[in-house]
Figure 1: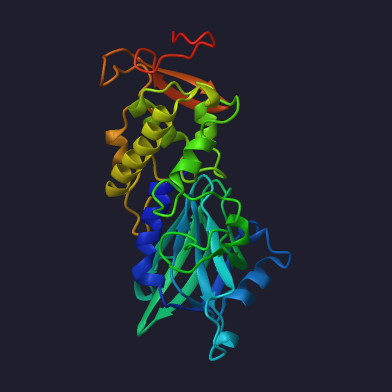
Figure 2: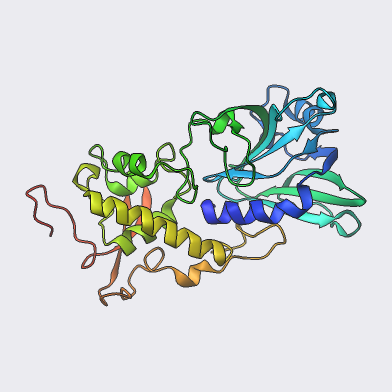
Length: 315
């Protein structure tokens, strides 16, 4: 599943093509990709055609584009009231083509939007092989803390479906102390807590394993047994790992993740734990372990990341 670095790579790639672009037509090629709208593809088309995209915005793994509707023109509204939102699911991708060079829709293309920006025309395709992703048009609501909703836009608003999602590790408005406190509560293993998007968003299976490896914390250590120093180290490690992944364009294991130009990310080469089962730990040489934890493939070094003992002795 695309995580913060992959979704941010997509958002940044969309910026020069969609910011300020007018949506001139919408072709929904699979109705299930707009399944959240009661009116289906017709409602989706009617809500988008003629609207102008303000800018792509992201919080955690969630991506949206605030819309200016023709009816809003000249009425003095400070911010848009609706957004075109997208969740990439397991394999969702956006691809951008100039209208003149656009190929026939790919077999995995679920929707195609025609855009006009200045004198240029583009085609925006939403591809989704595994079909867990979706597109939506929904209301925007004010952020609880009054700070910008996400990366890419200064407006303090975000889609209703994202309102329960916490700020992400790279968000300058993240309340670090509150985030660390939330990671130290309860009996769940710390990896499960890190995957809880309502606390700190954007961290998925890959980068949780990586941050835990860098912080030398076992993925099943109970949250209440995580010290304040370990919590601080984990927040810093998550930021470091995801920033490095972002510079590399994200992590691509196959064609299910590419950026808007169809190019793969290269951070897989920098992974220290995830996907390295049976290989020597780069830090101590012990073999990296793999097991299913909470239904998720989990990787760690048994020597560097000692298992917690309730008696207070790591083993």
